[in-house]
Length: 273
Image (cartoon, rainbow, N blue to C red):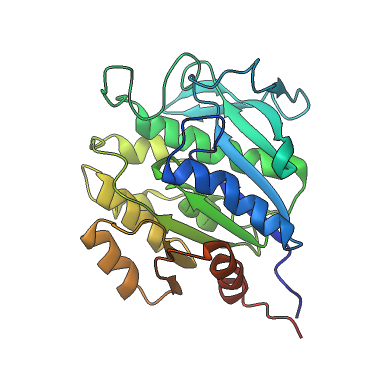
């Protein structure tokens, strides 16, 4: 058996592209640390509208862009951009779209109001990452998801993309943070999530309306391992994760990258000989 070699990070925030936060700092430091341990990484985040493209030297990757993703019967062009964090020797891919990300902040607008189409943004982001990885012809052993905007990725990987060569053997890890989404999604959520490879029966099991707790449980259901990323996590979500019978990494105040590196091998089930 071989060691887990390739790790895909589907991340919500990465410093210095957005303001420092627990998630943004981890989004920068964890992939870098895992890369330093000899693993091959790819890192994705949304191209939030508050990211300064010129200052951060983002540029479009034409060969990866140009696809349309259909959400709720509407076409949305997928634009892929890339930049590098030189100090970390880390390349970051950005998922962009004029409707969902250009001139728009993260979960909330400048007045603190959460965008009504955040569920569509999560659909677009998760599918955009997976389609891009397919085009890269890259096969991650571990896929580590961070933040509400990545919460649909485990479902898509395990159902809609399960026969794709890039994801057929991938294991999914989902990290739990403080509640970072306070809205609920309406009864149309399942229709917006729907795509080829999913069945109405699978989506019918999702309670409605969908809130942060429901979204987190959905991500846990389709993951192979769960990480308590924040010291304080919603108690209902935390209890659900601990009782799901899957590998669970408790909160680590120190040496998190080392613990996570070992956790990848545990979840991947591929210990070195």
